[in-house]
Amino acid sequence: MAHEHILIVEDEKKIAELLRDYLVGAGFEVSWHDSGGQVVKLVRKSPPTLILLDIMLPDMDGKDICREIRKFSNIPIMMITAKAEEVDRLVGLELGADDYICKPFSPREVVARVKAVLRRIASPGKVPDNLVFGDLTVDESAHRASVGKEILDLTPSEFNLLKVLMTHPDRVFTRSELMDKVQGYQFEGYDRTIDTHIKNLRKKISEKLPDRKIIRTVYGVGYKLRFE
Ligand code: CA
Image (cartoon, rainbow, N blue to C red; front, side):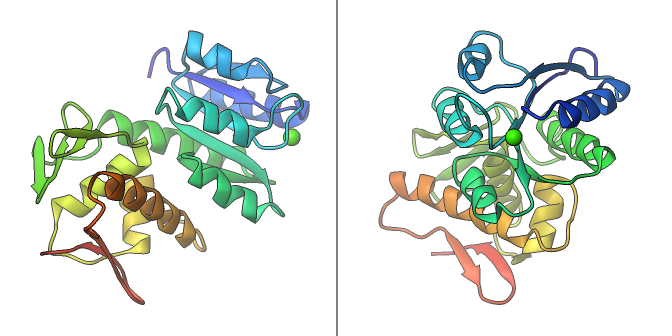
């Protein structure tokens, strides 16, 4: 994993140092910013491999940073939030963050989740190069999803979620299965992460196909693609 560069944006020095030590220990290059003001510019100029982004920051908060970065990049973003900020976590995911970690966290778990996010981008499982479902196409090698001729601008999590659903279009996937396949790990009580990714994905698909609901909710179970 040479030259994988993690950018930490966190104003609490102790937390940043803890994360940096563990990530450096795991072989990553790490840089750290303690305020939000310059981050968007910096990411635009030299994009890191992944960003660990605190929400409460001086100058510009993590949500605004995430929103701005998503205008030009699908680089993986993991939000760092305080335990009491559940609403913020969900808002972060709605803005297109791939994952979030809650303070207080175990640095080992953070490293494992960073690796999981990077792994699923590097080798998201063996599937055929092109998956097709109705007007939807997922081109695995180009890492591109499209509706007809129009490209869907998806985050890595949304892309992987769509890919998993399209691999077995006749199957119902439970939330924890999707969590496992999409995020690379399972975590009790994180079901709403998948719901939020699904919501974002539906929104992006419906912008191209306004009259059709492709992803069906199977109540009490999970999600599946809809056969028309
Ligand atoms: Ca903070």
